[in-house]
Length: 300
Image 1: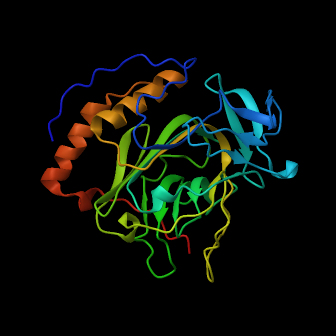
Image 2: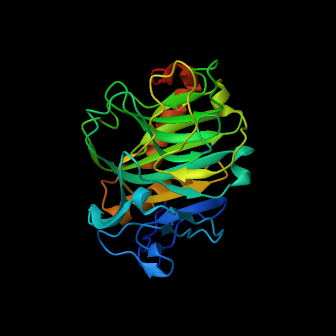
C-alpha cells in the first residue's frame, strides 16, 4: 500500500454531506431528523421518539416508551446538537442490518461521556448489533475507562472476542467531545481508536469472525453476559451527536476523510490522520500486530 498526503475538502454541515458514501449502512446526525413525535422536530429538552437515518436506507431508530427516551440537547457537543443518555434507562432501537454480520465493518461516533466514577465495571453500549455475541462498540468503565469493540462473545472465549484501547482513553471521570471508531476487516484484523489514535489491534481472535446480527440499539442493549458475570449493565452515560456505520473496512484515505469531516463539523482538534495511520501500519509491518494489542479486563 502506498502512502501519501490526502487532500481534504471542506464539508458543509448545512449540506449534511458525508465524504464517504460507499458501504454506508446507517447515518444518524443529531443536527437533522430528530423527532419528539412523528413529523415533529425535537427542540432542546424534548424527549426523542425517533432518530431518522440519513443514509437513504430508512433504518430509523425509535423508542416507544416515553420513560426510556433520551433527551435532545441543541448545543451539548461543542455547540452542536446531541442526544443525551442518562446511563440508566434510555436507549433507541433499530432494525436489523443484515450485511453487517457477514462483512467487514467500520463504526464512527462523536460523543461525550459523563462522570461514571460511581459506575465501575460497566459496559456502556454506544452501538450494538444484538449484543456481545453480535457486535458492540462500547465505553467500558474498567481500569479508568476504555473504548472496547466486542464480537462473537461467549463465556468460553474471553478475551479473544474483544479489543480495547488503553486504560484512561475514555476516562471514567468523564470526557469532552471525542471521535471514537472501530474497524473490523473480516477474518483479518479489528482495531479501535479514540480521536484517530489507533491504540489497539487484534489479528487472531474470534472478534474478527462473521457473526449473526439482529435488532440494533443505540445507548444500550439487552443481551446478558450469563452466569458469573459481574455486570450486565449496558446503558450509555453521555451524549451522542453522530453515528456512521459502514459494511466495509474503510481504507486509509476514506477513514482519514471521514475523520476529518467529523473534526471540522464538531470543531475538534485536527490530527494528521494519514501520517498517524502510515506510521502505525509501518510499525505493524515491522513488529507485527500482536505486540500492539491491548485488551480490556474480562466482563465476567
